[in-house]
Image 1: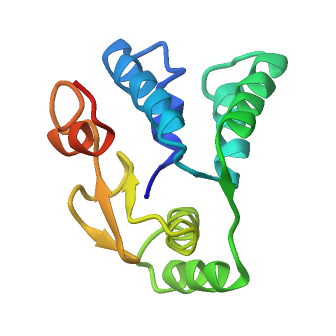
Image 2 (image 1 turned 90 degrees about the vertical axis):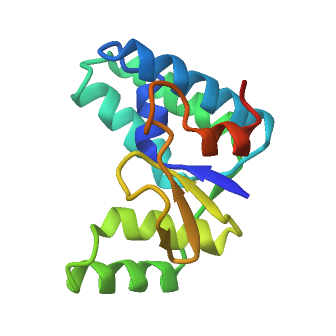
Length: 149
């Protein structure tokens, strides 16, 4: 099962990089078709990024977050996931939020985590990390995973 990091969804709304925006929009739509789950914190993060970084009006930011909430199955973090994330953060191995997303995705049964922020090809918390933007267009691995042209 596949899930995506917040940055992938953010690019779908990013007016600054039209190439990444086009790729991200295709990925989000394909993830929706595949009924891929997303982390519930992604909903809060997306509206925050839209408002603060892109200066999107509050109503539009809320609509974008609500679209994701209504379009995707969402998974939560458990106490064990929070403890693991805190341990990773305290050890200086990764940010709390990255560790929490990975731990939660693993608990939800995901095996692939699409993200631009983590090392492409790495295996973290039992998940394969896939960076979709390693080339000018979706990476070959993302094409294969999402059955993109």
